[in-house]
Amino acid sequence: MAVELRPVNSRESSLKRSGLLACFALLLVMAAACGDSERGPVEQPAVSEGTTSSVAPPTTTTPMVATTTAATVTTVDTTTPATVTTVASTTTAAPVPTIDPPPVLREDTPPLVDIDGWLASDVTSLEELRGSVVVVEFWTFACYNCKNRIPYTQDLYAKYKDQGMEIVGIHSPEFNYERDVANIEQAIVDLGVTWPVALDTDRRTFREWQGRPAYWPRTYVLDKQGRIRFDHIGEGAYEKLDQVVGYLLTESV
Image (cartoon, rainbow, N blue to C red; front, side):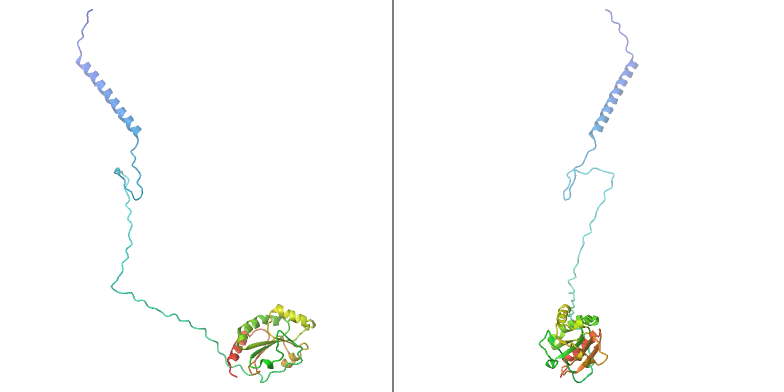
C-alpha cells in the first residue's frame, strides 16, 4: 500500500504546540488555586499568661497596643527623723451646778396630826429622821398630778437615798375610796412607791401644813435640822428640787 507523505506545515505545528502549552499552564493555575482555597488560614497556638509562644507571630496589619503598668515607688527619707507629738488625753468633769443656799422658809417642822399609821416603813415620826434631808410630799393615789410626779420622785430617791436623804409621802385622800387602806396598799405597789407613806385619812396634817387653800401634790424639803428649805405646789421644779437636796446633803449642821 502506498503511503502518501504530506509535507509538514511548520506554522501549523507551531500553533498546535502553543495551544497545548497554554492548556497545560491553565491546568496548573487552576490546580494551585484549588489547593490554596482548601488549606485555609494558618492559626497560631494560644499563649497563656506567663508563657511564651515558640512560634513567631505572623506579620499583621492590626496594630499592637503596648500596656505599661506604672510601678509605685515609695521613698523614705531617713535623713530627718519624724517628729511625733503626743497629746495627753484629759477628761473634764461636768461642772457641778452651784446654787445659793436655799432660804429657811420655816424654822421648825410642822407637826403630823392624827396620823392613822405608816406603810412601807418602820418610821413612825419625822423626828426619827432628824439628821437626814427629808422630802415630804402630800399626795393621794387617784390624783392625776400626783401620779405624774412619782417617776421623778423615784429618780430622786434612787439618786440620794444612800447619801442621807429620805422621802415621806403623806397620803391625804380626796375621795372615800382613797381612804381604804387596802386600796392605798395596792396603789403603792402599782405606782412603784417604795418610800415611807403616812396615812393622813382625815387630812388633818394636810391642813396643818398648808392652811387654806391646800393642794395635791405639794412638796417640801426639810434640812438636817428639820427646817423647811423648799416648798413647791403641783408638778415641775424637778431640777430645782434635785439641786436643793444635793446642796442640803453637803451642808454642815
